[in-house]
Length: 271
Image 1: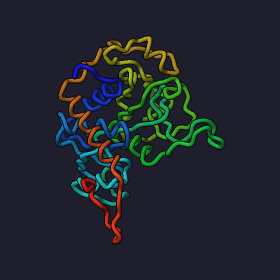
Image 2 (image 1 turned 90 degrees about the vertical axis):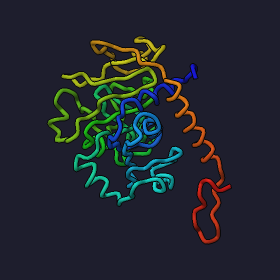
Image 3 (image 1 turned 45 degrees about the vertical axis):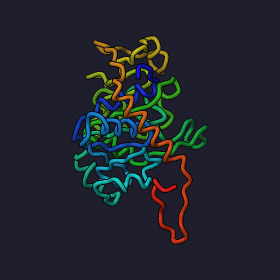
């Protein structure tokens, strides 16, 4: 268990930011892996909410999408989507919104809409979904993405979800109720907002990563927090839980799906 990849370390670092019994609105992909790793290790009673309306879900494998039946089958309850937003998120009952994105800028605003011009994009992305509302109303948000100058940019191609807008007190003046991004977790370390300017700065490095590497991966002059720590390597238990989760997921997603003539779903465990 001494060897680990940057992707594994990134997921472990993100999972460590969560705490037991916190209510977490989860995005698909890296955020889902991090939140479920936290549930399988140090936060067994974390309450995971997915946008499809599943509350308290405890998936055995990572979902393909918010509509994956694994989420509904293992949830404490399933409610209509409007209730998730009206009675949980907008009512201030979500501790953490955990999001991914294609781009993040220096003030932690996110783009998940287009790369290039909106009217003639180079790439059209999945779009906003519930991310703008999560970013606006969750008590705090965490963001996960792999860092390159194309993903960590000085200016977004499209602003899908608000972080700290143009910095300073702009978010507070906007009327957004949530506290905004607390951390951006990348494959070199953690960025956190400066207390006054709200510009992202380097707060922590993954083992083996360097300040020069971090600065080369972002598209703005990256400043340093007063103290830049080096994060602890993954523990054996963290790696084992993460690798088991990914192994189960690969096996489940690799099985063919067969529907009987009456249209009933065949359970994942069926051959």
